[in-house]
Amino acid sequence: MNKLEHLAMIMDGNGRWAKSKGLNRTKGHERGAEVVRDITTFCSNHSEIKTLTLYAFSTENWKRPKLEVEFLMNLLGRYLKKEIDTYMTNEVKFETIGDLTPFSNKLKKIIEDTKEKTKNNKKLTQILALNYGAQDEIVRAVNKLNSENKKVTIESLSQNLDSPYSDIDLLIRTSGEQRLSNFLLWQVAYAEFFFTETLWPDFSPDELNNIIDNFKNRERKFGGI
Image (cartoon, rainbow, N blue to C red; front, side, top):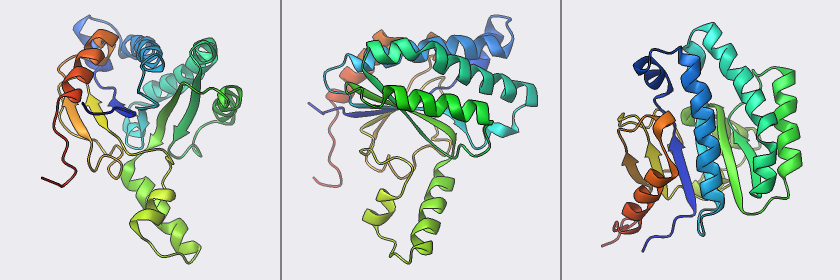
């Protein structure tokens, strides 16, 4: 039975969910934020899962319409303020990966305040990938090592990536798309993948539990026989 300590998820399908119901795309994002709460709560109460990394906003998402990007930034700020009770009740530590530089000072403060308030929580670490792209992450890590005149090795590069956490055990993508979209390319070297047709706003803890059962029974060889 495989051990699942680090779960990563590409939360895809908010826009298509809203369109299928004749709603504005923003309604899909709002519903998607509610699902984040449900999945985070489930993971915090799972006996094995220690880290949950969620792809919230990629470096490529800036290409979306300006009004949608502004909505997503505001939604993130509202979500973090609203969910502080969820973080504390479920002993969830909040962290981020990605380059937060382009974000507004107001949003950066909300992010830092949430990290500070939850820093001592122990059951689960929830990582939101914000303005994150794996290629960008790797380039920044290499540049940092070069600037410090340090040799680039597997170990040194791993230690200088945005996430100091363990490699991914299981990566799930919703909405039926089957690609990584520049997410955690280094960390998923030996991860198991699962792609579901379910759109993110319809994804549930019950479906996640079924996927975990599937993962548990897969054979992981890590390059061996």
